[in-house]
Length: 400
Image (cartoon, rainbow, N blue to C red; front, side, top):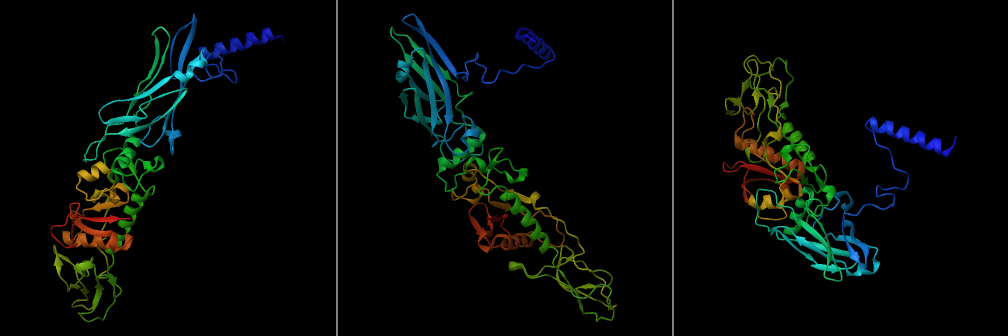
């Protein structure tokens, strides 16, 4: 078969694909720039020099730093921003390309340096957002990149790359920028920014959170759930249900181990003619259960089958630095900003036979078991530490 016949067959096949809604692939080595093998410039401007067209081209714009490749041209302060250009048909003029990053908005600071000459220029951004605290997302830092080339006769070639397409912070980096602005010890990289699987874990200003350990908040909540359930079901079956021949004052079920300042708390209701020998809370037994007049152990321990889901009672979890300051926190290095702290308000938990203060103490005791006594405590607001049975307390803080 001749080359001409082969070419016609390929052309007809290609046309059939186009009519079917497909596109023909390029030849190997082509990049969609007319066969030059080079990527198209980000922007360009042309003029005349000695009767010859010359073209100023911005070839590339890159951001340096951890995870920068995945971020495209989003950035934070401290990461280098590199622009590359050339002058087609007049390479001798490339050293005269003038570059500048022009800040957009009063919250975006000037670049360092303010301007630079050459075929390549490296800049660093700065922030003027401030750290007063707020409950809304910060505006993104953004710059317009300008490349210009003065020509003889007063003409100037100019290329502008708008921030909406190029140098504008994405949400992940707007959040990361807060940590840089505040100067916190924890400085999250892009790999530590995520959308939490449980919305309740995000009490910040963005759709994403930062965690010092990926998934740490969810694991902490699961561990707290498990421990609280254990404390609510820790009564002891002293005599097997159905045992006969007991004295009326024989203990059939006893409360579990004492909890902080409130002591042992029963979680079982007497059955049959068994008798509650301890205090009643809300009409429910909170103490030991005795065999009663018939001398038979009628009661099974932990028969309330208490079910609790702490997720419904989380009042605060991850907070970005601005939100953390707005909440009244006394430290910029709060564990909330590291994604490693939970505030839990158990006062409305529907647990029969427990007062709000007892529930507060149960949650603090669970925290003691999960993270240790130093990292589990009861508060009012962000700065007032209280005993767990204080009527003024409004949450238990648990941190890693």
